[in-house]
Image (tube, rainbow, N blue to C red; front, side, top):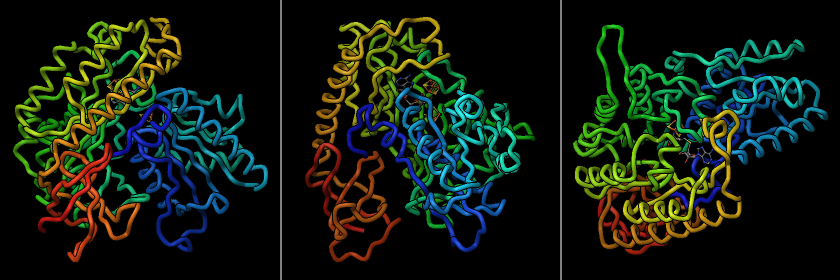
Length: 473
Ligand code: SAH
Ligand code: SF4
Ligand code: F3S
């Protein structure tokens, strides 16, 4: 698991680090693109689709900004801070353009969708604006921008899933990969900008998902994370009329190989079914870990957020998970200081955290987003310092809960998938348990490698890491 995150590091941690990938032989391509990604795993996955589209057009990826003919930034709008980070990068890229003629800068992703042509026309920060459903048109847009035209495509689609595009894995550890299973979101959580930036929900062809997972396994990958904003509402109808639910899809992917671990993100508490829980319990290789964002512990606030469940309903869902999948890891997303939040509502959030005993949480203070239901309907009336103080209390509590969860595991043995060497020492391995906990343990004399499974006993822990010892292979 990642170290504890506050809003400060959210973009880097909950949603992966911003990265600039390198792929393939640099001499194979005449032109090069450089891409930085921000935001959620879906955005990182999209950058791999973009890389595939550009490779076909003769562009190779480069990590070196100075070498790039095309500079792309795949962006996030989820909180104001995420957008500010991107703006700072765009100013930096603009300076780069001034020194190097002919370089094109394009903005992709959710901020492109939200601001449309504003960054190109009014602010003149970019040459291209490409929304999340328009990546197939990227080569044509590059051509337009090269010809000095305004290159903008922010059309949202009802059916684009990029199903046929085989993503080029960027900066991968060669063990785990993201696989996108659906796009968009039909929920209308009142704080959230995603339905506006990503459009209507649509599910990707199940066969193409299973084929991608099988291909990853063939290439040596041992873990896939199925991605969607709301994976439990996955529903695919094939041409022959056969339907696949999320539980059905999980099963199909689990059957690719017992050695392929399956994870998924994110579940909406209202949509996760017993059938999904039983499927997780049935297959050893479907990880015992559920990310179940609660957002708030107060029924009144949950209603204003349009989350469609109550505090009690959520608690019953946690009970159900623990009943069907004993020992299941559970994590959450939590927002403090949403509109009208009182001290009692905040206490309800703290107490639901205690009840759910989250192994981990991603915690934020509320950031009003233009155009959302909350922006239109409610005043953003909790002072910033109160939002931040409540966030700190939530972060502190989560720190204790994570530590207690880790302590409960001491003495137990887990099957760990080795992801690579520990960052701190090349004599230690780093890997994860099915429940999502990070284990670090000495290699000793065992002949193991990345992608192997190994039995590890938890001997000690910190708040973020289990320290283990190999007991068998
Ligand atoms: N579909 C995912 C959410 C993606 S956004 C899901 O439902 O879990 C990830 C998290 O960002 C959300 O769960 C929420 O906790 C947080 N978030 C979204 N909008 C926010 C806002 N306006 N201010 C603060 N946090 C927000
Ligand atoms: Fe946003 Fe809610 Fe959809 Fe998640 S489920 S993306 S929080 S609207
Ligand atoms: Fe951000 Fe868009 Fe993902 S707003 S969280 S990159 S769906």
